[in-house]
Length: 272
Length: 171
Image (cartoon, rainbow over all chains, first blue to last red; front, side):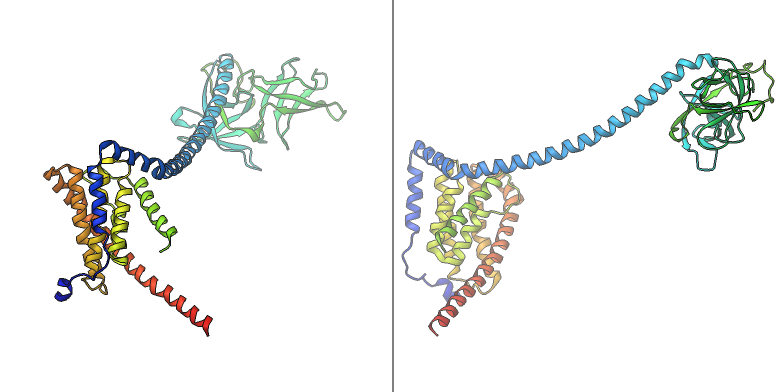
């Protein structure tokens, strides 16, 4: 081991002196010459690699920027969707505010949290006693009447809609004032009963609540006349009403808080 | 080694320097690729090629710094020669021998390099030595020892294939 360590290296032409000489030559070269050498080295050797490096870095930047932009677009899409929804809600509220004074009542906005199920004429809304909702308060949308509150819990209320056989609404033809009772039997359409044959009811007439039942205020749109059956089968006309509200498109409703004394002049209990 | 491979090796040194430029002292722990390549050539191909490759790589690695051209090439040549010198005096059968050669030579080279970089500020030199050079040298020596063994094992296999081929042709 030690013999090997201390032995002379094998005789061979060595280039070390030449390398040292060249390096010393570089030491003694003038600043200008060294600068020229460096410039040449950078221009012809390093430049292509720097260009490649820059291109790859730029590519990586573009990729990262693209990712950020995609995330931004997604966020803006969500924001846009939210703003559109708020815009629609705002429009609904604005329309409500426009006709609310005629009811002399105040509206409580609520989301439909449990929509109409097949075979059931009731739905759930997200407002309850915490927001002072009470039983029998009318429920409407900006388009017209939906129903009335029948059960109230803290944060939810159950609404019996027009598409429930147990609900009847006193109404009349807005044009001719021909009065009748709105009810539902099947399908999406409503029926207007107890309208005498002498009454003037025409297709396209708007039917509104009369307020005579003591629950629904006067003037709420119920629907429009779709068909008037004049066949001589009884004392009354058979009138088919297209409801103003589409039950399958209910998202938000308003519960109308009656003003004390609103129904003082009507006979409560005559009609639901 | 063909000229193309030598060029590829030099290009890899430049690519490494372009992608991982030197940090000002105190340096972070990093693989000293240029010194490692010089040391590997010295370890596996001897002093002569070690000096030539060391000088060229040291010169190239100096890049656009005119002040580093001279001592960079000198340092590279010194590393190539030193590793080649020690290779002839230690038993390379042991991986630790290779690691020891690489570690000691690279440590001296890095210390000298750091001395140039710090401009003789011994306080900064010591801080940098402690925080960056020791770990970097250990990393480079470990990587170099492993690569050197792989290099050694790859060569005889190639030679064996050539000799077998020649036997087949003659037979």
